[in-house]
Length: 163
Image (tube, rainbow, N blue to C red; front, side, top):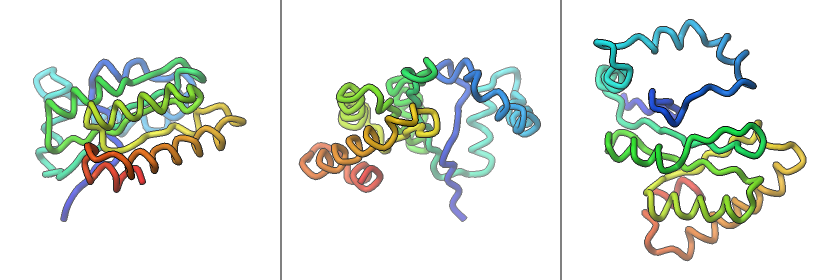
């Protein structure tokens, strides 16, 4: 059986601090997060990596996050790409952009895929301004489709994930 973790948060600085608007969420998962948070010899990263070794996970998706315009929080594409490259090939990075940033978001996404090697797109739609969600996400979807069809430097796996 292949194990793929589709949404993992390694214990790296890019994911700190937790968002205040998700504190209730943290309460719900407090017990399981405490179990996962146990460390091996006081090293959270070593514990995190060894947990995936123990279960022989084939892939682990780590998603960047950008909700700066609504909550002032960003786990940068660069930090996630660096982590995934350091622990490849198991770890797969997905770009995170804030559609409220318009063309800036599109440029960040293109850079993340073409230059950083990110293989998917993470949009925190529930954390975006409600009146902007549909319009901005549609623009990104159209742009991503046209980018993948005209780019020859983009890996084939990226095209499948973002199409």
